[in-house]
Amino acid sequence: MLPVVALVGRPNVGKSTLFNVMTGSRDALVADLPGVTRDRHYGVCRRGERPFVVIDTGGLSGVEIDDLSIAAARQVRLAIAESAAVVFMVDARDGLMPQDRSILDELRRCGKPLLLAVNKTDGLDVATALAEFAALGASHVLPIAASHSRGLDDLLQVLAEWL
Ligand code: GDP
Ligand code: MG
Image 1 (spheres, rainbow, N blue to C red):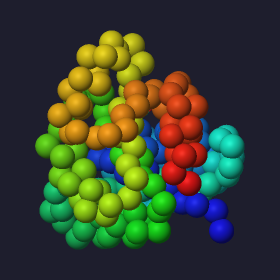
Image 2: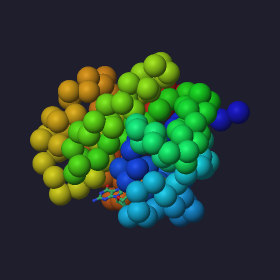
Image 3: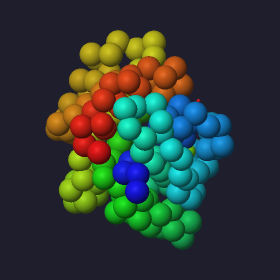
């Protein structure tokens, strides 16, 4: 069985974009509309040394206000449960949001190896973009730009050590 990695984060941070780049597929829904991917979505990443399964999760808002987001959050928890490692994505353009903290709290309770991927760093000063997220105290932090495939090799290298 291939190891599994879950992509987790608020809606619109770029999870589906990263999923598409990792799996070389275009079927994960990428949209400007937040929260489009409601279910778990599986693909295989063959770009690193060894293949692994990637799960594109949706809907973990950190604030579950309606039945749909509760169902989506459950899907995310199931995805994390079957994962060997988690990529927690945040949006460098939005900056650190309260929801990011609540999602991270939840992820930390799962005790899985965690990589904080700071996405959308294209066109930004990377050091400044990262500084804001240092407050989260993650041990592994990487700047990426999923839509430009930037940072992908570094990300795969970190994951390869964990899988
Ligand atoms: P998801 O809701 O987390 O799955 O986010 P999506 O993958 O659907 O992306 C949300 C929006 O962010 C889309 O308009 C993407 O094109 C855009 N996006 C994703 N990655 C990047 C990036 O690295 N840089 C920029 N500038 N935009 C990005
Ligand atoms: Mg999505």
